[in-house]
Length: 141
Image 1 (cartoon, rainbow, N blue to C red):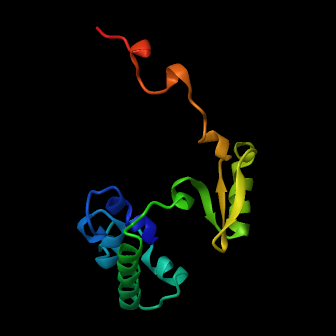
Image 2: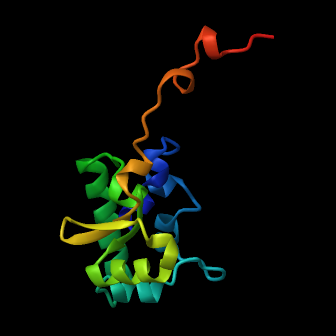
Image 3: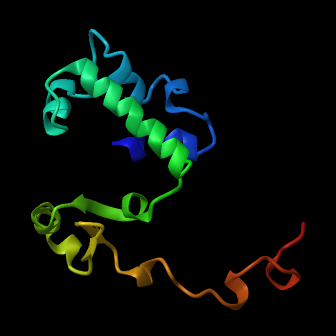
């Protein structure tokens, strides 16, 4: 949740998620009376909170810790994964993907599991004409 809150910080658009009004952070801090995107009561319950004020204070602390410790560094578990969570959750997602999941792998990471594409899909080797533009592969008009 905090990782997503920091998307615009990582992108360099703002230096704190509170400055991005359309963020989940802003919605948690100031829940709208209508047209909420976040199911706040369920999110609080899943996070182990019964009181909104306690949840908001803790959420702000989590964001501040993330900003101070990692300065919102990119984490490939979230940006290159199809699913992240418990083994049961990742297996369920893989099963629901059916044939599209045939070559997807899941690996243990930091007490959880990650479902991802095989690394070969992202590590192609480029040579010759498909590398940096040069006079041999550039048309000048």
